[in-house]
Length: 205
Ligand SMILES: C[S@@+](CC[C@H](N)C(=O)[O-])C[C@H]1O[C@@H](n2cnc3c(N)ncnc32)[C@H](O)[C@@H]1O
Ligand SMILES: [Zn+2]
Image (cartoon, rainbow, N blue to C red; front, side, top):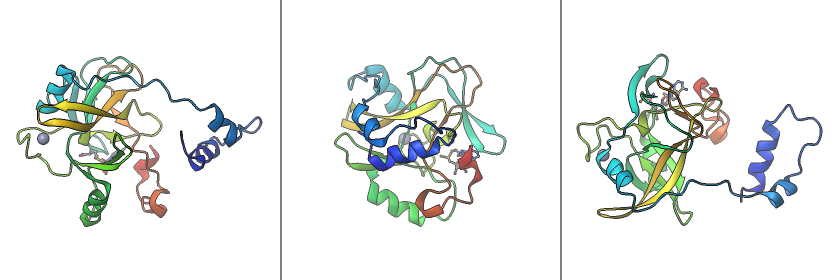
C-alpha cells in the first residue's frame, strides 16, 4: 500500500481537480495493487537475454539535446519486457556513497527495493561493464520522461546460472511503434532531494 504522504502528493499534483477531490483515507481504503505481469524466475529466454545482454528491439541512438537514447526498432505490445537495467547490484547505502563521489551528470545509478523490501541500487556507471566489454547496454542509455514515458521499471527475481538475482526490467506501458524513443519516468523531480535537481530542466519533460 502507498504511504499517506505519497497519496497526498499525487492528489496535490492534480491541480485541475476542484470538486469531489478524493480523501486520502478513502484512497488508502480502496487501494488495490495493479495486475503485475508475472515473470517466471526460470524463464530461459529472459535469463539468456539478461545474461548475454542481447535484446531484440531496442537500439541506441544519438538524440538531439539528450546525448544518447534508446529507440524501438520493432513494435512492442503493452506489458512486454524491452530489456533490463544492467549493472552491478549494491546496497542503497553503497550507491549513495558512490553517487557522492560523482562530480557531474550523467549518473547511471538506479535505486529500488528488493524482494523483501531491502533498499538496493544498480550501478551502471562503468561503461563498458566488466561482464560485457564489447557492448553498450540499453537500460543505462534510456532517457527520462514524466509526461511521455512508455516504459516502467519492474523488479523481478531470476534464477540465473550463478544463483538467484534481483533484476529490474523495463516493461512497456502501452503499445509502442517503430522509431519511438523508449522513455521511463526516473521518478525524480526538480524539487526532489531538497531542490538539488532544480537546475535540471529535462526533469520536467
Ligand atoms: C541514465 S542517463 C540516460 C542516457 C544518456 N542520455 C546518455 O547519453 O548516456 C541519464 C542522463 O541522460 C540525460 N537525460 C535523460 N533524460 C533526458 C531528457 N528527457 N532530456 C535531456 N536529457 C536527458 C541527462 O543528462 C541524464 O543525466
Ligand atoms: Zn555486463
